Image 1 (cartoon, rainbow, N blue to C red):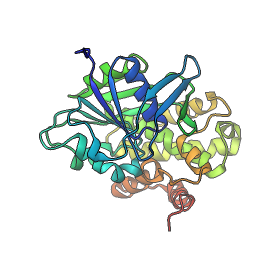
Image 2: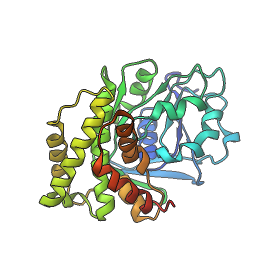
Image 3: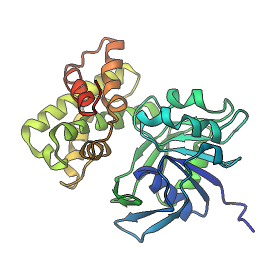
Image 4: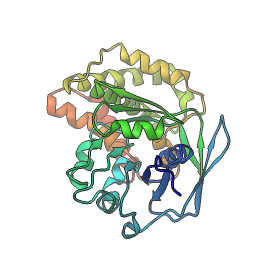
Length: 300
């Protein structure tokens, strides 16, 4: 007989982050459905500090086969892949559906991207995710460190917290925009890994350190124009984070670049340029690197 405390959790986008959250939900005793583009019988998540977790499939590839009812939808596709996930969103959150839809994505525009495609009655919950995970081969994901998620303290977040807190540090933030913009600043600076083709050790170079800090200050100015409470001292905190990383650590966008995949540049860097222009905040570094990132992504 099914455990009544087990929630029905749908994960849209079982890549590195999606597979990791699926494993956490599964280990917590919940029923997990994987929804994606590539069929697979199962996915293996390999934490550096623990045993492997096999997330059973199959990975569903047809939104028409989506479960009729779920209790929680976790959206883990990259921001630029959201449009392709719309059929899944509509299938899992039909009109009248009330299951929270949680965006496990980068950027500060998550709610605006998902809201038009889900039930009006369903809470759309943005998040700030830190999942040091990477796909090492098809069907296998390495999780290097314990992940963390920050959610706004609002309806729907508590359910996600309950599902994920067993294998992930989950915080509820009263000032979520400030947390989100701090993470976006870190992500924006991480674009220099993509452009240099290097991993975290590159931040030890004085010239790259100086450029990175200047980019962080630029992002923080835009963040403050958007209402975030982030002083310039945060730039030094972010640089300290990069310098404390293992020298061989990369980011999802670097891995995508190495694999020749489309890049999530707009949600991580383009947004700084766009919102800077809206508020009249100069973004000279972003004005240079955003076109380069778009070109690296193969866009005309």
